[in-house]
Length: 293
DNA sequence: CGCATCCCCTGCCTGC
DNA sequence: TGCAGGCAGGGGATGC
Image 1 (tube, protein in one colour):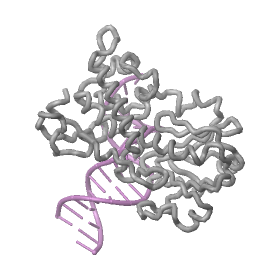
Image 2 (cartoon, protein in one colour; image 1 turned 180 degrees about the horizontal axis):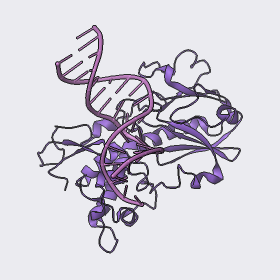
Image 3 (cartoon, protein in one colour; image 1 turned 60 degrees about the vertical axis):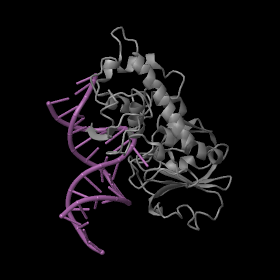
Image 4 (cartoon, helix red, strand yellow; image 1 turned 180 degrees about the vertical axis):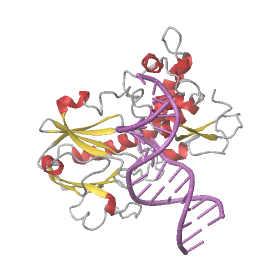
């Protein structure tokens, strides 16, 4: 579920209760999510203070006071929910909206400031790990990650360097986390529509023969930045599982131009064609065949 | 190596 | 109403 804007929204919601607080107790309610938890996961977290909460691509990274980092990935259906009062969790207030089954609260963090934070993940494609902070950048989860699309180094030249020579369709290349880190199916579709670029075009064709970026690649870079910033501003997109940490909904889904809009009118002024759905690399692509070339 | 396919898991929606 | 099948925001393993 969560792409960069959803993860960033979660980060901003968690930071006020996590940063500066200690884990007084952590409940690990099953042996694994997508992967097994590291040995002694809950025990190693107990007593640790959170120094900062960051994000890289779709990963949340909590820096702890013992020079380790708690790394968390939400997979497709992961969400965090904060219950402020000490009695809230026991009173069933974590998931009163009924859309979240408390059976899927796989980890519960008890914090020194009285907050309880539950990690809920029905499909269990998410995972958590504890990694020494000094080893993070060389860790297999992070070492191959590509450009951070809201970072300073993301520009047309850098993207051109990553796309050069690629015969894969643009859609697949933008989903590849070693090219741009943090985009997912929604925002790739939305950015390509904004840039009027066909998802089926070969990615390498946007690179000039001298290796520099084409003008259209510069437009794509700006469209990616814009759609991500607008989505963060809207609290992300809530299709099924995404919730802010207070349980409320993001609302960027109402601003989708093509994603999940098969058969609807293309929103480009004067276009008049209908949004199409195709499957690329096993995943749906929504686009306009008339104004995306 | 690059790329495509399949798979992990639960839940929701559609159509019969 | 029940049930089977398809599909879902991610990404890792496999095979060509």
